[in-house]
Length: 385
Figure 1 (spheres, rainbow, N blue to C red):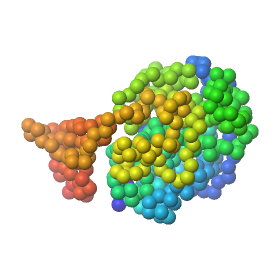
Figure 2 (cartoon, one colour; figure 1 turned 120 degrees about the horizontal axis):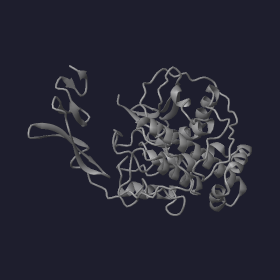
Figure 3 (tube, rainbow, N blue to C red; figure 1 turned 90 degrees about the vertical axis):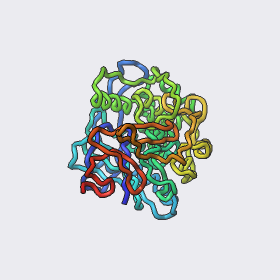
Figure 4 (cartoon, rainbow, N blue to C red; figure 1 turned 60 degrees about the horizontal axis):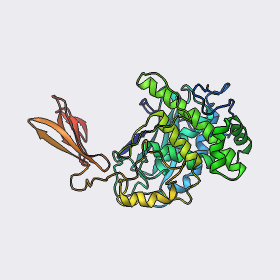
């Protein structure tokens, strides 16, 4: 059985998986406690804390319940379900999704992710919505590691920033829609300029306050993303803010993790986009499944804001990406030049590229058609000979 593991954007350190401890849960109310907005020196909310075990499990139960109907409707209908597991024995910082050749779509979290700096129940809810976004968020999809072009898995893995966009545009609004007191309290904690984003986007007070809570959680999550990025690649920490948008414009849509400011910009865009997904359709999941294609982009268009403050930022999303036809070249193949082994790979958005093996390696192609560099005595399908 093939198993595909996609690291979510909230994760910057890999972790091993352990046994799930999926206990009974009870939802609890979440709180925030600070005035936050555009000031560059905004402090994290005072009195905030990581979620308890009961809170974390309850949040995952609720997020998964919101989208079981999407899994059930996926091809082949009635065979898929979404599950979650937390490895309470692992201190690794990890939260990712597993899409396998069986029936389950799984969100997998380690205990270490629950206790990272800046983690709160609100941030945990947002990052778990991000994980769900890998399954449900739709186009654009990751071009590598999807492993299935027939659609039999029922979905393809959305790229990292699309999962962010989904988290604040669709998932959190559904998760927090009825928590009116918490929404109002969070809205009051934002500065006037931040609140104005929501009052401009929505005409009714309930939607404005819900939007405000999502903005507050987005700012807190942006802090966490920046702190984790600095741990991965040490540099001066610069917290993302509402009023310092990333002005980068990419030539092609990016699949991986973006800078924390670009990610915050994307979370904000999702929060103020009034186009909410309905039904159980995975946006853009059409043949060729998981590919970056004009057909996929067009099918997903009604599910997102295309212009204005709610549109996906150009710091990662380029709707005019030129698509390379990789059908004849294949995803990857072995090449040898001047006696050096390498891999030629083709991706729809980045075109044809090469990487070369180390001197003591050779390129081999597995039975499923993927090529990579290996030691001479390694079978790509069976491990060491």
